Image (tube, rainbow, N blue to C red; front, side, top):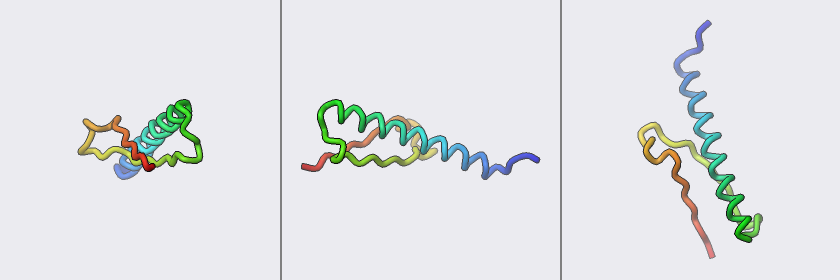
Amino acid sequence: MRPAAGDDATQRELQAFGAALDRANAVAQALTKLDVAANRITVQAAPELASARSDAARVEIFLEY
């Protein structure tokens, strides 16, 4: 039985979320290496939108002080 087209879209979305989470964790790790306290870092991720593929590797960092 062939998976439904929705299953393919769901799989792509899960993969995109995983990639976004990996990028977010890499940024958090780099910040801790720069002596930012780990308890001051919040990691969040969102998969890129299909219409925003050009920004697929974009990371947003918000600093509060």
